[in-house]
Image (cartoon, rainbow, N blue to C red; front, top):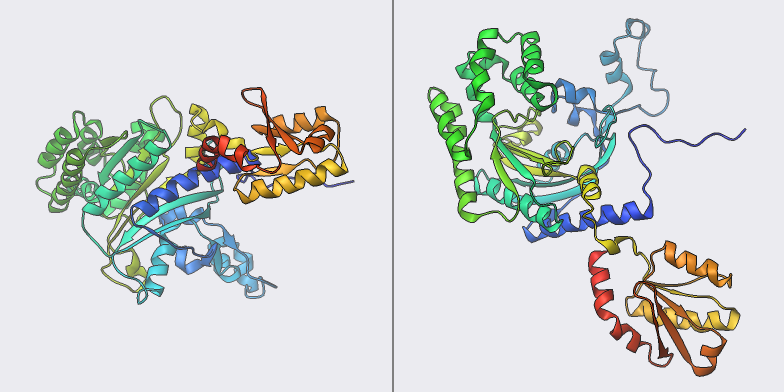
Length: 469
């Protein structure tokens, strides 16, 4: 009995239409990465386990896919260790590599290994898949692409300003207007932990706080208590989670509340610079909003943190995020190299564009011209025309067999082909070809000696079509 085919949960096959749409997003993002001066790099799909482990917090580490060693991977596990059923201890013996969890830590490793070849500040972009052993659900997959842009070697806050502008430019170009770019600063969170008397529990505080939009205030409070944060501290922090007013008004409140925390006050000052500079420069379509509950539970963030929410009315988690990391390369031996970066969530952006109907109508037209096959002689003449049209940059094909006309036209409709070329016995006799417009209807006859007249007549359409794809 044949095996029923399947794929692992959290992974997907992509149809030609889906690939076209994904490439459309990739191309828009890549175009703006390059416009802003970022350079491309790529890193391996898997890294040494020691490169990844311990960089994402306990929860992140649990989501890293480990790769079993080649050969007899159990030969280094003695009987006592095997009998202990200590998965953590056993894993270190049987797995030395892991699939990358994100692109940022591998990038930090790359910078350290290639530091003598890099001109700082180094602006890089990277578009590659990552893997997480997460529970699959809408908008959350175990294999997905990240589109990252980072700058290392500069602690200037102008980099944060530029990254907000980059978000705005990309989403405006995708016609995804009205996204909200949320801003916070880890120094502010550290200041809050300090003023409520729980500085030593900053990580527990931020990890719980980062779940506010998922489990609510009660859920966050419960998790903080479970981590040993006192009720008195939680009560002191509560007013901060309900800040209102404009960004500058909220900054004023934060400035007053954190006046006794040097680190917290510094975070407020950094946010104020970013907000005021962007107010002066203006944004095209995105909204900028301070969110003091935004924590982004990755331990390596040290300054500004970003998160992008889809327009109102769209039920979707964040579609982008990032932040400042002052010494991520330090874990690999290169100290005091500050960096800041953002990521675009391709798969979620795809779902949002699909839901809102924002993909261009012509995106599924992977073929611009189809020549109908009427027989051997007609097909040979058609192939000569196909060759000329392809050399002119037109996506053109000949139906491979002289099937019934109805079948060939159905194929053209299913492929969303805008123009069908007919070269039958009559056209052979008059050395011509007929172009049938599948969108507007009607048809036009051209000489086989001057096919460029057809190309010129529809050049605007083909130019627009190629731009979309």
